[in-house]
Length: 431
Image (cartoon, rainbow, N blue to C red; front, side, top):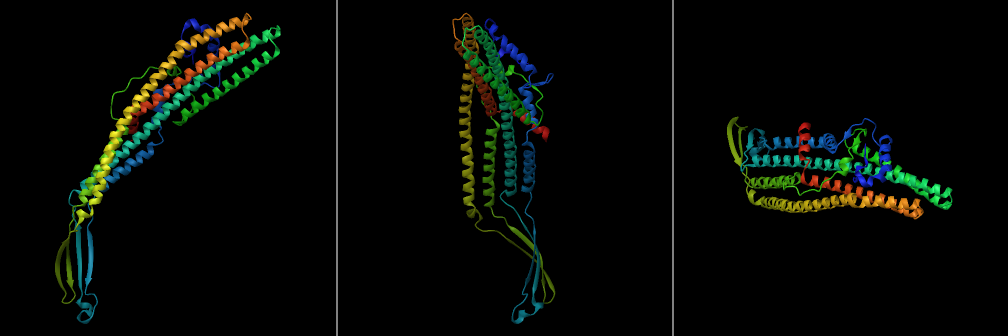
């Protein structure tokens, strides 16, 4: 059950938060929360469920099968050929007779040179590695979506706490102002205004409840399950400023390197195509005139193959160089983004902590002082509502900072490949 520890952690200021404690108890029985006895879902469990039900896995498995088939096909040698020729079939003069023709049946086989088969096989293996890493990158993107959705669901729960606290404060203030109206200490419109503010707080509370239901449904939809679980709200409020993770290769960089390897293999394929492949033939020739038979052998070899393929080699080498430059650029961008995200998370963590330790306690004390002065007739009702609004705004601002922190943490985890072992484990289980 959610508690008020995320809203105020200083005991001397928590006397004002008795309504918030009531709010927490209401949350346990409201329709916006999980059913009694529902299991508590942590972020680790949510990520594991998402990874196990990633919708991109079947397509990735099919691509792996296709890549393995491409490797087998790349190792196949060129097939032989069977030729049939009839010479002097028809003509003039002495060749007008059909018995002067010559019939040849020959068997030919090309012989690959220059390592063509090995080059093709290496490129197919490199392309299979690219397909595997692309699947891993897609799964990490999905894991990030799960992490962000989990953070949004937690933020919705926290916002509901704030909305419940705002409503309880509005109801209490309405009761106070109605007593003053009945005793003719305040005009009638003050009571109407209090009723309007309470109605607005109820609308905000109801909207927050719907957001909680929507957040849980969106989270459960990522693995096709039901939303009969509770969320660990303490994980939302308990954060630590991040430190820059150590430099390490990520699937994104590995994918670029694999694409570089494909480009390098393509260079070898194009270079091997510049080596001509001879074709040897052997056959039997039948001479129609005299019914004689003779053995025929021969062969052929293409001319100018190396020069004809020079442009393809240049293109493949340029693509390899481009891949190398992309890897270097990606490393720079990655390090820069890590620094930016780390600074952003540190700033949000500091902001949330300062609001908790400095702003909220002073806002609570202000509400207590203004309320006491209002009951003595020293302040107006607007002073009370303004103090309570400032307290609610501070709590909402802290929730926003925490939401931004957890969203940024998901981006940082994705960038550094933190959940790569989880993706790799589920990939192995799928195979």
